[in-house]
Length: 256
Image 1 (tube, helix red, strand yellow):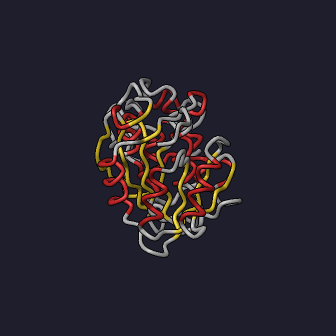
Image 2: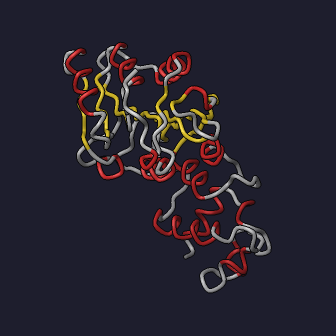
């Protein structure tokens, strides 16, 4: 185990429990010769397991303290590990191609939600994504309508992917232990979006309605969409946003 201490400002919690690492690798199912993108490898415990399975890994790491550890690991594994030194949010699809590739990682708590939202919307689409995040974030990713966790993140993930909450990970599996439970989620991108929608309008709509989620739709959307239009779409104006389905959000967004 590296002596690098997790940096609080980067939201780091380094995974160390062997059984959890093995379960994550089993979920990723790396194949010999396969190219995989890993976000935030830190000291490389998951990276090493992927390399041992024969994969080629592009690891995106912003923490310069981790770079020498990863460079040494790359030399041990025939340079099958390429290290992109920078911010993952700025690297996706530009400096680091992800189209058609599996994307994995123990995502930093402070930016994990935005990373998922950005990745699921990418075109051309990525391959299967397997992430460890705070349990509450995974609950929002996998949420269904008419539940407290249903919101912007769940709608976007449902529009673009099949979602599967795989298993929980206790705080003791990390150094330092976080104050919350973590979960591992699998997102399998669909060949096409579930609904035809202007994605910019959809994102605008979701931000409007879920920042005031306890208000009725007729109140939140006043000046944007008329009650008559809602009713024509089979949507009750006195309902709240949390009861709408992905298809209904898309239908509303197309009226903005």
